[in-house]
Image 1 (cartoon, rainbow, N blue to C red):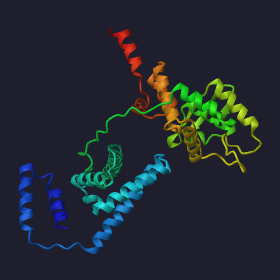
Image 2 (tube, rainbow, N blue to C red):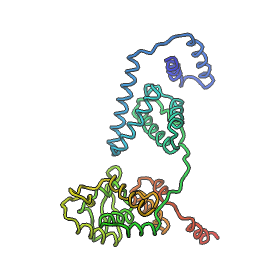
Image 3 (cartoon, helix red, strand yellow):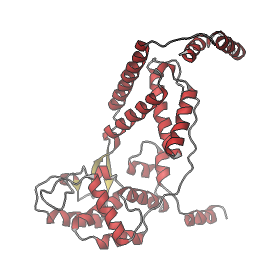
Image 4 (cartoon, rainbow, N blue to C red):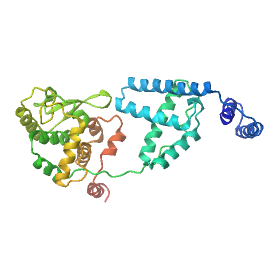
Length: 330
């Protein structure tokens, strides 16, 4: 409580004093309040807790209006709640040092990766920037916390041989059509499981998917995918409008977890490491870049809001870099 009082006084005097004067004021306050017992009222603690909860709910509501998914909103809620539990301060009294210490302790206790810590930093930055924009606080304490340098890892993609091996090893028409659709469109698995039969335009070999934030975009598939999709649909006897359904009755719509389990088991059976739906998307991006697709068109195809996200997916093969060097420079 004593430290909070000092911080409040310093905050009020921030615009009136220079750095040297602020330093002297801090020394005087620490000296004068050294032997003073200051008790925090119970009602004040409860008030801080209620205000934190109220402002967090308001922030979550604002993000929901912006179109964030419920999965993202839950992640935001849990991240902010964990921060408040650890720091135990009202949102107006949280400092940059509080947040730095919190992130450091979080990483040490949980042995979290730098990517995880930077994700938490981004959420805190978004939250406190929103509080600043809404005039709940004067200045965001996250402003001086820089982006965590995570380093770039080259993530694996499927080889042509692996893709053909998976296709040849499919024991049913559904899995074959599913693999072809993922690999030829680059759509997210969450977008695929939402598709209905009527969404597929076989003539133009295209379909509309709903991406993140419920944004519509057009994706395209090749002739092989068209044939395998038609064969799968014609083989079905159920009346479920979903494009992909379970193999056993009552033939419910296939969920994301069902696709992941199916592909993981296929990978184990074929001894192909790390088989999962998102890897098809990364493979398509890499192949498109290697074959000369403009990055802006790939961004549109993948449904990325920022081109930086597309660049993270698209990893140019070193052999192509060598050829380009010889063509343009050497």
